[in-house]
Image (tube, rainbow, N blue to C red; front, side, top):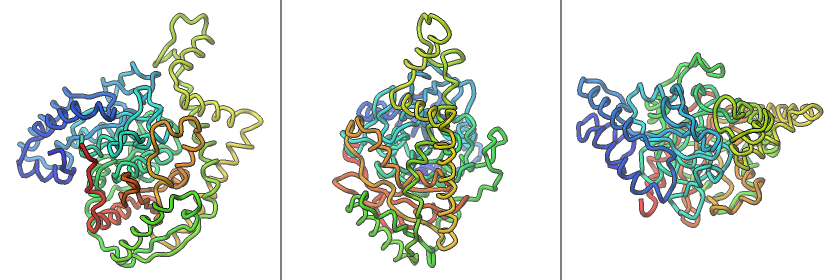
Length: 483
């Protein structure tokens, strides 16, 4: 059962080959047995899962249908879930039980999805390796000595290890796509505003976006269908009709114009990954796609711009965690200032503190124009590059990451080295574009992903290309040894 995709589970439940309750019990037992190796879960929700599974079976018995009805999933632990710990991977929120459900959680529950638990993540979604979590690092199931990527590493590791078929995740600078690449999954960052951020604890509000992580593009289409849609509670949610993402998966790629930016193939890209990307291009050409070289001239400025904007927004968003209203509170403070200092110093880890400091500096009087304002101008240039490119092509293709997953602890002493691993993913967040990573091969036994970017609200196009590619390749079917 654990090897089935979301689509296969939907068919099996519809054909009464098994019940949601049976499947849920199998997966809960599997998580209990195997997750100690991975540390991919922060909280298991057995009682809730069995309750939801029984309810889903009853709904099916009454004639209700739906691809997510009875399907087991997990949520990244920054989606508020009523009455359940929502920690953001931080000591600061270790004791926080959300009083309400995030819109994404509520929508998927209404569709009948079964929540198995909350997955581990980099603290407050700040990281590219899932090593900054208060609950310990997550291991990559393909090699337990390597990172699974971040910040959605728990969701990625759990799905890759076949502990469950799919999970929710979030992407601020690549935190869905990079873990997908590192663990041989398909991960989709939707257009900014496509998925509600209400109840999703914020890192950088103008960059964060929720999305699906699964083994196939078909499964991502099913999960995104349940997540997407306008939400009046979220001022950044966009009132745009949600298409049937599964309906366009079978479309032909004949004549599809794929742009390949020359800037992607620089000295920083592992040549073995470059070769796998070229192989992917050849596969898509066989399916009728037309390849064109394009340029994204301002890509070189994206990382410095991102690492001003994101920490600036983080310093503002995280100011609410002060030891007064909720979250960790230090013991026996001398006065209010001592309460603030020690509560935040004890509650936040080193990476979060580093980004708060950088962000506060960038927003301070005298430096705002020099750093934050300039970074926002670069953001506009990056967006303009994409708009110009999409006048010529339908999709942009390139590597998801410049290197395969690194060893645990390898970049801990050099945060900037980890930041540079986001070079191909952060531009989509700066511009608000949808992006997808799909499996493209292996380097030294570790998975590699190819990234696709599309114009606004063209998630269906990304899913179609990825699905057609996966019908003609088998990289996404590979399973890590021991799982």
